[in-house]
Image (cartoon, rainbow, N blue to C red):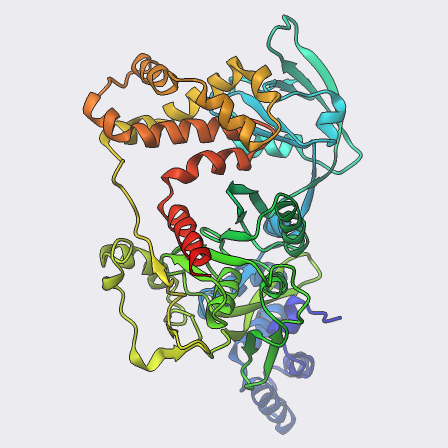
Length: 545
């Protein structure tokens, strides 16, 4: 196992000799002798190759007051790392747990999904068989007290509420609940337990024999979750897949490789990495994938990065499926997390990765210029790249060809096979106001409260659609609600935005059921041009066969 400390990073082995030389030199400081001159020369020679090491050692050994080198390191290391590429970072011990939590697949807590849109903790959903479910907490409950402290109406930030609800597994938290139809507070004790974090946000049969999977990140459990979701869709007769990687910023490289393996045939190259010594590590499909026979359309956008790009690039370069959407972020650097004994870590870029055709999709950067790097997406927007594929230019020197003869490019993200621009057709001033002021979302919370019994009875996407479609006045009632909240109707805008408003209302209501994000995406997709284009593409592929 690789072990490291702050000092082994900042102070090479020569430091030991250097400190000894410095101490000896200090003992003879001020003596004009050949011996002291020799010692001074030794000190200078020891440190000549490393000014940083020299400076830190001098501070530690000669500064007028005692000072903690570890404290200095907390300030110095981030400054050092900022001079490297934009993806090498130092993570303090205080931030490690939060940063790793979403990738590790679980955390300790009570097992509820909640929202604080009205300055009160509203339970949207209870994780089945989790601690809160066992304690009798129900969707629609308001948490008004935590450990005998009032939290409702106190304008407590959401992250502080999360901190109070979470804690080591096995510990108990006392909650006071406000429940519809019950005049007195309902008091429960919840024993905290391990709560799984899902990297797959949604998986359902979207149309006919086509399935939809939305992957939010590549976490420790992603490949296992993917196989489980795929098996469930197969059981429903799904033989084509829309795989949504939009907004997926990456995660564990090995999980991207494992998911790509599900689609590729034996001995097809998935990805290879190359370090500073030009040593390569190549990863190939082993032929055991369960989706080798499935038609697939992969959705990407400008927020799809790293592991998402590895997966999309592997399928594109092997002529496996169709990539749809907009040009991805462009992160082709591999980080290794090197831990320190105090719980902090250095995430250091140690290699570049390349797609099967040999493409590096890392966008250009200058060491130390993180600000300029972050401006890239804004510059793409200003260059009209989100709206027109013709605005995107690639150098001919970065052109590559897939085995099937398709032209692909490196040097700045994955360019999709089919470009789908940002669509603002149905966005009006009225929609911007009701959405921006959170009126639309607050209405869905109140709607879910009024129809909680019916929504809790919903078991699948089809039942949810039937229930919501039966409400013929959903949009009209919302418009009246928005007017009471101070947003006057704009008839022309409402006509233009009606389908979008209806889809968002149904999507947010659907998320308030036990279907969670399945309920959201099953209702929003008709307004999603990328998903609709993917459905058209997969249907056309089937006809061609």
